[in-house]
Image (tube, rainbow, N blue to C red; front, side):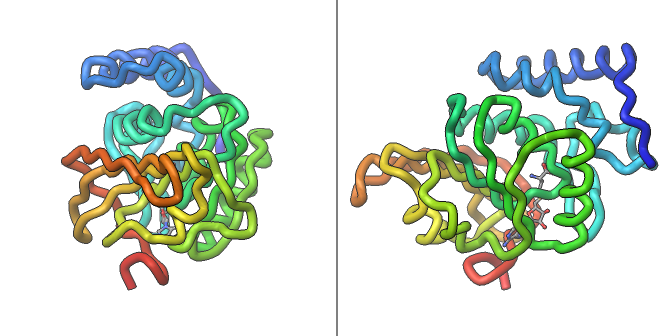
Length: 218
Ligand code: SAM
């Protein structure tokens, strides 16, 4: 079993990572604080743990990855989480991104397509004492049973914006989703001003594993 030890060495590496994220343009102090406070190495396989504070994505099993810290910070900053926000994350993976949302005061619902990852992460977050609503299944159509959400975050690359996700967003809510081909995507921030008006912002240069499932890549 992995030892959950957070040493001065880890804390120092995390501080350096936060300084790098700041240099790369992340401005939200609450997001930077959450990254500074959460030991990313807890979410790593023991064989890769020495890489936990590199600004890179790493394998977490089942052909999936824990996202690059810059990407986590960028997506979280775009979401502009307020304490008490009800947030749906699609792609639980290691649980790292969901835990960042939790530390920012969100009520987190997170769904994962790979059963082994879902089961492993559920066990691990329980051990950490992190309260999160975890689900196993295809999140490409969202999670209608618990909608509507203040914010929805997709952490895998989609071919298009699934309509169901916009439907499950409250008025005034925000959807952050990478959309593109199977290798590279633009990050979209869609703000639902009314049932008919969606404001769209686009940021280039991201590379996610594909969003699978009915409204994803088949
Ligand atoms: N947020 C994760 C973390 O903090 O470790 C990183 C996630 S990884 C980049 C993308 C995740 O999306 C993978 O775990 C993958 O299995 C999951 N995924 C892909 N398609 C999905 C779908 N239709 N529904 C739910 N999860 C999906």
